[in-house]
Image (cartoon, rainbow, N blue to C red):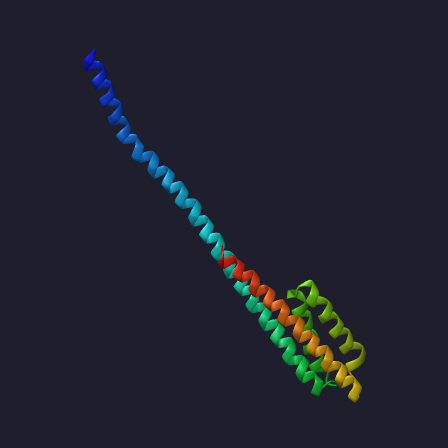
Length: 154
């Protein structure tokens, strides 16, 4: 009887010593797989947000450049066409706060600024709207940067 118990205990220990590392390896592999999926997901989000920020920055930069040159050439149809295209591109990427400022700027250009010359009052109003537009776009970009920095804090 003494031999049977020691043989049983030895068998259980031997089987456990073989099976235990297998279970540990499976648990570690599963955990490592979950961590890697999270890392890849975070990297993808960072890359998407970085690309989104770059596209947004380029669209806003083009809009401000064309809006500045439009002031000097407000009667030129190609300038007007380029500016309205830039407005639409920026509008596509902007947040809700920026959209209202872009829309206001677009309405002002279409209704008041486009033509054969601006009065001094119209120029001042244009510059005021352009400044408001620049500020709104800068704020929009800083919000986008804040979203990006939140991803790095994960």
